[in-house]
Length: 272
Ligand SMILES: NC(=O)c1ccc[n+]([C@@H]2O[C@H](COP(=O)([O-])OP(=O)(O)OC[C@H]3O[C@@H](n4cnc5c(N)ncnc54)[C@H](OP(=O)(O)O)[C@@H]3O)[C@@H](O)[C@H]2O)c1
Image 1 (cartoon, helix red, strand yellow):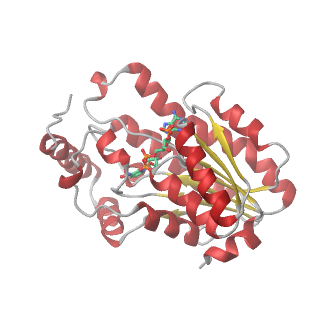
Image 2 (cartoon, helix red, strand yellow; image 1 turned 90 degrees about the horizontal axis):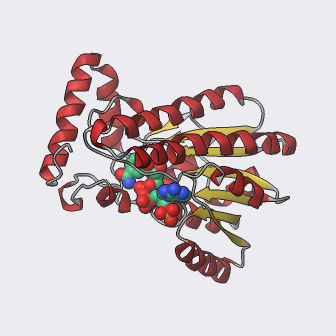
């Protein structure tokens, strides 16, 4: 397995992390800083990125640049690519994302489109821009944050799960395309993780069983990069994904519908 301090030797001096202002992305940034990798931190909340950047510069003496960009906007990914400039970027952590839960037809159209853009379009366009740079330097890594929801249909989270299924297919396809090129690609498929995403999706945190710590999720992903196309962190989550893979499709869809609507009901959300 890749140890934290090997990452810089293996992948190079600079990494770009999207969704670095909180949760799993912030922990990716902190872990990469422990490997003395310079960072480009991307998200919308500039003040949170600035505060993290100041801390990492002070503690580790690193170069940490803040890139404020809205990845739901048409030119968001291009703005991020432009910010890379001529830096020797070796790692792309495409992690920004958010989820909308409930009855699909009741979701606000603009928010649904934004979710598609952040979760699926932006990771694809960022990877498309970065791969030629990684190829030119002969070495690199890409991590896509997907979800256990990318592994199966999830009624009442149909569109979010579909964006994650897109990322899973893209990431694992690229893992195969880039095999032998020196570029490692990993899809990270977290289960419920203790970040703002839980409450932002309308769940009550205290009702969520087996929440993983985001630091553990990020650490595992960095260890697994170069080892496997897809990593599901946590034994409970792996058990769940393996169970879903064995279930007949119709049963699986009914099971996930029941699980999701029960979780929404328990949080007082209902399906609308
Ligand atoms: N937590 C879970 O249970 C869980 C489970 C499976 C997968 N995931 C995935 O893990 C990834 C990270 O989420 P998290 O759990 O760490 O939640 P989080 O703390 O809410 O982090 C989401 C990150 O994405 C950024 N982001 C959201 N919309 C954006 C936009 N329009 N433009 C640019 N950046 C945007 C946010 O930054 P700003 O708000 O500052 O823009 C934030 O940094 C997501 O892809 C999520 O789908 C989470």
